[in-house]
Image 1 (cartoon, one colour):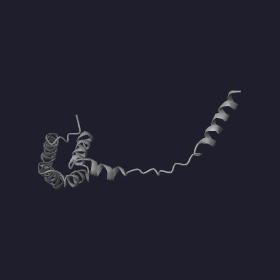
Image 2: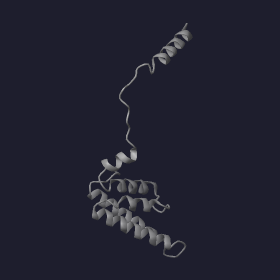
Image 3: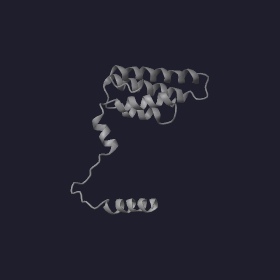
Image 4: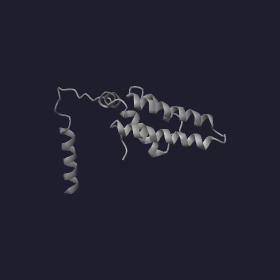
Length: 128
């Protein structure tokens, strides 16, 4: 008896689903379009920075470029901090395999820490 009941419920659900016609189309906003207008300038940059710091991925190719590009519309202190991060990153990449490479990588970490502080001061801190 139970299998017939289950089959009956499934058939009932299948035949009644979609019977009604909704005249109002469903409109969904693109996640990227919505976040660009809803987020204050710099919030995307600060969020990317937080993820990179948490993941230990600042030296991964493209990460700093993404952070810097996202900071282009941010306020001056945040944009300046992003430029300092970019300068430190470029110096670290140029020092690959050289004796000063560890110091240059440490400078990237310091610049990221500084930028994280600017994010916090701007009210855009996204990590605990």
